[in-house]
Image (tube, rainbow, N blue to C red; front, top):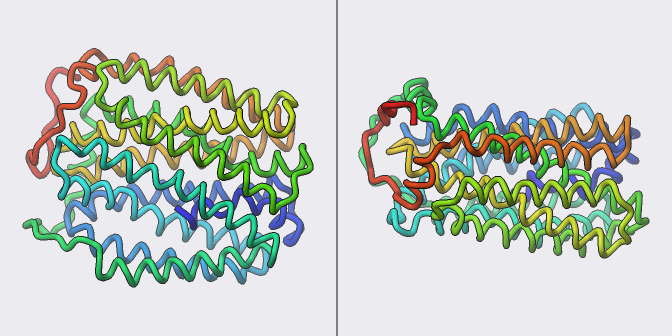
Length: 388
């Protein structure tokens, strides 16, 4: 996550050094998220069929190489290509992590474990992303990529020892389309993908451009951006941990809808109204908190439906997340270039309202089955009868 979230605080510096505008530099996030989405289409079946450990270690190795190479990119085109490689490698890790947690954690504790793991994104945003701003202020935008690459090499070495070894019998043959067909035959995954992608447009549009908005609108020095980043990250952590409660609540569809709308309204206020620096920081932190609830809650809920294809199920939810990220960064960049930051605010408000309107499509069973986590189940879940 450090390698993925490294770009937003650096947009102004990268744009200045490589002689491109901030909206163009913002497409680095689009390249990362789009490649991540492509990676997710393959990684879930790979992890479920061949094991978690080899997929995770290969992903970490490629991620380390892409981060180190990004530090030496001579132009925006090469940096875009390297960010795409970062997305391809990064996409291997979260679904594999969800899969291995599902393998080793009891069903009763699974929602809390998965949402806690996903809350690491907030920890990253609160610790390493502010460090990115400080490092860039001291040594330019390339220095954070060098440090991130070194940390990833360290992560690869320790996970060679720490990452759980797979003790389960697997077919060791790739079952690809049947896993996706079985899961997509369930109403839950069809609705969750649409709801998640729509809501994450607002989440990633907000996180991708709020540091640049603070720098250019409120004249915040790059080094000082670390403080708003930490405050916003605290909101993400609170939202992600709250998702465990939402995932087990019978009114979880209504909670996903309401938290999304509140987050969208706060993002709208942040980008569209001049609030004063610290009021704006508080508002975007609230937006980050409420927009951080839906995806962790739906990832945890997906383990109720995915049988032994839990990494594949997590991949589908990750595809929803990253598709929203790619669309959010791309559309927000276009709106920023044409309408200014207010355009991003209107985008966030519109997509979160659309997300809330789709949540009733989950159906009554989504609430009635809350917290009833599935056991091992068949290797490839059978299509659900009756369309629910």
